[in-house]
Image (tube, rainbow, N blue to C red; front, side, top):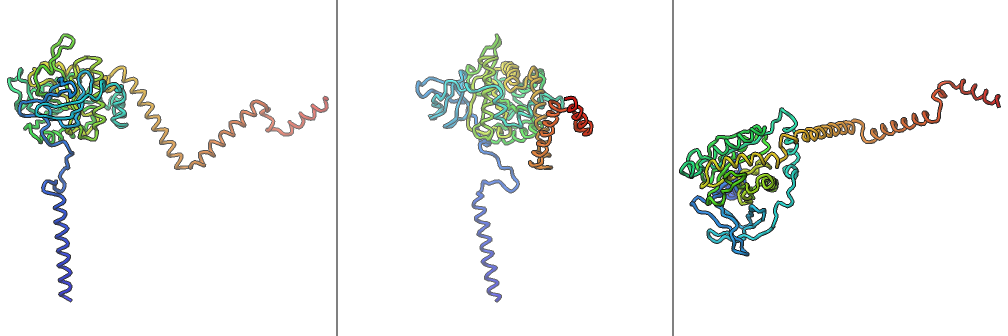
Length: 405
């Protein structure tokens, strides 16, 4: 008997060890420990070249240059250029990236107002309430993932501990505040500029989103030659901006539509301001919110002054592109919010009634009211209102009429 029990315990022990071993094998050496955050795909990695080089995007059909990029690209990534032509990456050969044109006007379908629909009902309600109610200010959140990025003409270097991009973020904050926004600007430093930079900045982005901003902006600068970004708008020499949307995030459709709306509006207000839109591999923490955007202000070869001038213009464009301009949108937002509140109240009343008396009770109630209303109408049109009150008087009146005849 003891031998049998010992044998049973032995087999159970071996089974437990087998299950533990299988579990560890499935997890693998790189799997997160219990309680550790599981990071989304496309968050860890070097998404920009750090060797000082850049790629040249070339039309595979004509061999003509489309643009230059320091961003690491992959097959299937896409780019909308300054003329709103859309290109898709088909092949990469060293520093040459071959692309094919997929559209002559990638912004044709963009209409103001579609952004709120793509971003979801909650985002739209939040925007309306923030405009109509003083207790919910219109808020923009700004942070810097690559804290070292700087401008050589201004600082003599392209990288330093506290990069010039913080000055761009400050300029952006000031311009939004001039336009009536409340701005949350994080000065968190996320150095070094390595494969874990977006992991560190993710904590900053999550903290900023607790304040429920309408837009979350990550400020960067590019690393391609100066001529790719320099421009003159309304007589001012300034740096173009470029928008980047990650392909590896659950909000990529909403964020891409948001970027398109920004460019479409900028093309109307300040033609040439937006260099283009990259829809490239990476997450960029844009899975956290449906209005997250990475904006590159110029390149390392343009000056800080040129970048801050661009910040002024994009701060003017963004409220109009998202429908959050203070006037006359405030009045429209107030009316829209009123309708929303009225519909919600009506829905609650209907729900309570339905649960209290049911469909039969509601139909019976309205049936009685309808019948009553029709009865009153009939008396008013064809009956003496006193007829039913005094039967004797009615009979006497009838007798007198007979005698008279």
